[in-house]
Amino acid sequence: MSAISERVKQIIVEKLGVEESEVTPEANFQNDLGADSLDTVELIMEFEKEFNLSIPDDQAENIGTVGQAVAYLEENVK
Amino acid sequence: MSFKRVVITGMGALTPIGNDVSTFWKNLVAGVSGAAPITRFDAEKFRTRFACEVKGLDINNYIPRQEARKMDPFAQYAVIAADEAMKDAGFGEDTLDLDKAGVIWGAGIGGLKTFEDEVVNFAENGKTPRFNPFFIPKMIVDSASGILSIRYGFRGPNFITVSACASATNALIDAYNYIKLGMMNVCISGGSEAAITNAGVGGFNALKALSERNDSPETASRPYDKDRDGFVLGEGGAAIILEELDHAKARGAKIYAEMIGVGMSSDAYHITAPHPDGLGAQIVMKNAVENAGLKPEDIDYINTHGTSTPIGDPQEIKAIEKYFGEHAYKMNISSTKSMTGHLLGGAGAIEAAACIMAIKDQIIPPTINHFTDDPDINPALNLTFNEAQKRTVNIALSNTFGFGGHNASVIFKKYED
Image 1 (cartoon, each protein chain N blue to C red):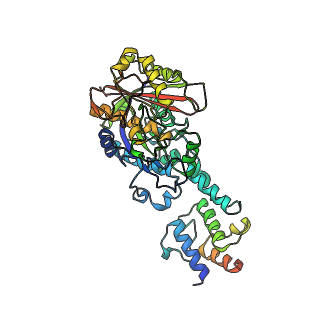
Image 2: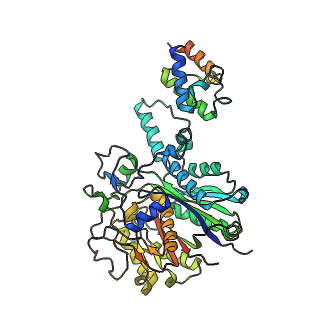
Image 3: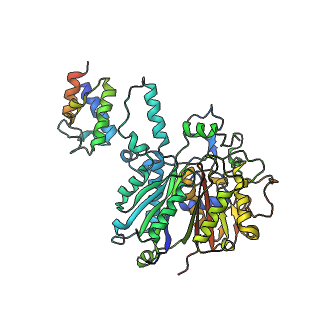
């Protein structure tokens, strides 16, 4: 696993209180990991903070799963 | 329509001298002080460096971490106290119509720590607006009642009363009236506060409201003592389950006491200073006694607002002497803030609990830390100094007064069928 995906996983485990094993690429924040809409906004903010970038709202709307988050960050983190 | 009777069927408390009702009450009767150096933040630069903090509390023993982190401490305290009260009330399955069950909570400030943390974070990060999405729902003062309603599925009336240090008493008053009017059967009422933060202590220090007796925190809260120098900030809260009498009887509930009357008034004088003659305090006690259908001489015990401030304490005493006349010298009076400190919006809740327990156990908790008589306070009054006193307690009155000139009083009576 890439360093980015490991850091993403740690943030999700910390913020959503889920087990590491649940944080699979297919896992949807809301449907599988028990997040509500506010939790999802908070996760996006945590990713922005951790990786020092700004994720525009129209991009953030497309990040619903762990894999989508990792893919977006791998593409955009310098 | 006929008015309903309202009884107390459950209680929970989280206080600086005990994290449940039985510990709180045992220490209140024993005269234990909850004051100690501040641990919540580094208070070294503050004029006041002590407070009455809740102690030995691991929030995660009560609320899962993922839920707890979305609540300000004042709401966490509400949940912990309410859980105890709900368990104590012992509602079995199908004994509650959830549409007629409400939550009316009191808090004077609300999510002060949440507000402070978010604004500090904003300032320290170049004023880039990156506020947490939970900032507003954690900070707003009604979050506590909202969280409780969700937690227990109560779909009746649900709101917070805000009247500074009278807040929890106003919550009890509203809960009492709505049950009396038949608008709900059961209500989780009470109040909580968590203001021992940089801004809370610094703000009250700026008002010169807090005791600065840093060399002796445990004797700093000394209501009615000549050398009192301000209140001691406390935190925590209490939950009181109010229930319509027939509803309580139908399910065979344990009944602590009956709530029989309430009073409200305003000083209409100054935003922080009490009326010098205790005018608002006289009116509120009169209103409560009359609302309960009593005469002044029926009151056995007054749990005073008595915060240990130089100007606040004597005005309440003057009001008691003026309104109660000769009877003022026959009843017991005490300020339990001498032990708990001042819980601000939560004060009325823990002090209502103290009145209810005084009726249950027929004993008056003391005003501790009395060392020197104040020449302005009549020694003929029984202020229950330093030690608890056993006596017949049929009826107890709790006073609370808040910045803004809000006064609120409630009266509890030993339950008789």
